[in-house]
Every structure is written in structure tokens, then in C-alpha cells.
Length: 59
Image (tube, rainbow, N blue to C red):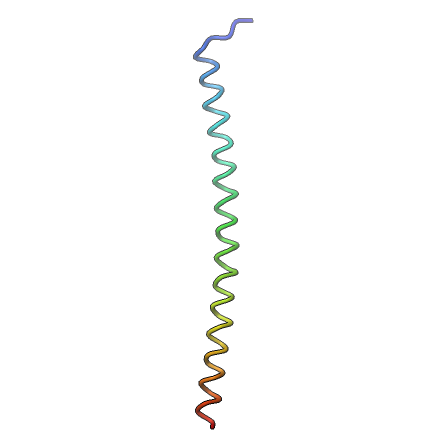
């Protein structure tokens, strides 16, 4: 069983690439989930402001 240095380097690069793809997908999904949570928070604040403005107009 002969292992060349080029084979070892190639294997290391492929493992790094594989883990990089997995981490990239993970962080992409995580950023999408946090973005939806932030937009929900902004929507709730806007709804509250609209309610206060409507209440102010009535008074």
C-alpha cells in the first residue's frame, strides 16, 4: 500500500471542501431563519405604530 503525497493532499482538500459546503448550507439556512424572525418583529412594531396612529386620529 503506497500513499503518495499528492493523494494525501487531494484527500485533505476534498475533506475541507466537503465540510465547507456543509457549513455554508448550515449558515445559509440559519441566516434565512433569523431574517424571517427579524421581519416578524418589524411587522409587529409597525402594526403597533399604526394602531397608535389610528387611535390618535379618533381622539
